[in-house]
Length: 429
Picture 1 (tube, one colour):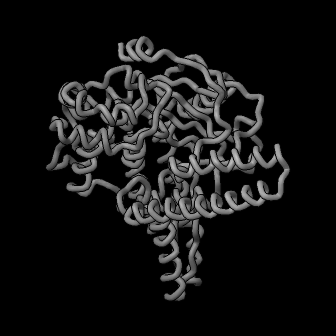
Picture 2 (spheres, helix red, strand yellow):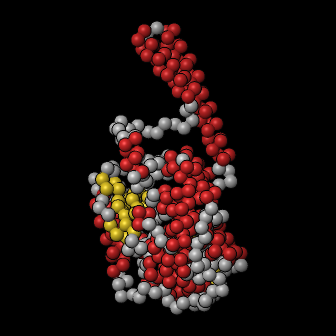
Picture 3 (spheres, helix red, strand yellow):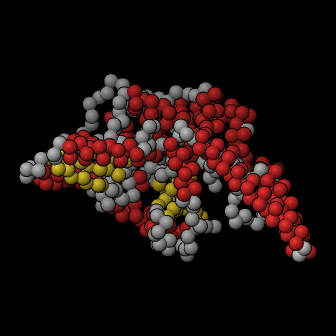
């Protein structure tokens, strides 16, 4: 109904696309100055008089200086505004030092991508067809429990809506920035929608659709091969708002009861790739200072987020004390999902998503961290230390140079890790 109303009141129209977005530092005064500059250029090209050329060059010099000053002011303000947010600060520097490349030339279609992504996951799943969908022995019952998610107040819903990044998914009926602008008028309906989902333990099916965008893993890779792309899910803004409502309460429960892996730097407040790098580097430096040798083993998983087994994940949540309506909500969130791949101007047919957590979702990273939490105990049982960032795991083993059993201990640890991976339907790359 919302889309139909917009189509009636604001019918779609076509216009030529801009080759590049307008510069954000160009204000009305600079645009007016640019208009005068172009008029002076046209006048000189028509008259070819030296006086008109001098006037044009003078305006051009002043305009260039004004643009440089406006650009410097814009980025100075942007740096100051993100001084306390390392992620935004890094993204700003990255946009200046590494501007996004143009879209790679490719003859691939949306169907090529959806067939490749589906086949890759199916091939991995088939190697675990005879495995049980259980995560192993249950943990000791916890004294704490999360049986339901609490309803949120209108003010809390408003903060969730207005604090989100104004990115728009093709599945959205209207731009996210517009929703943020009119969120005050829609707040009673948004509050009712989100709280009904939280209390009933049910996620509406319309929130479980994703539009997958294939992204080239590295700019240097050949864009004509589907193997060089990774899938990123674009989700509607309301579904991400609902996920944020759950993420806040779930993260609070896990933190208060010390249920998060302390050696996981991915998707955790105050942690980043920097903290992971510092942790590993410090462990190696400390071992060297104590005259110990060190072995560093780097583990990488193939399509890790896409092969998460839902039954094992739900069993893991039960072991962490998540039950009742909260457990039902997560089960509803995982089941009945579908996706379509969008590439250039084409969109593939919908495909069912029976495994995995969506890359690009709000909850997906936390769910994956919980899914792999028990791997730490397997590594520690062999006397090795470790640190993780998302699905990348670094194993560190420091030992006296005279220890002739180091290789055997590492091999035994890797053998148990391989068994754990098979039990959890994950494939070492």
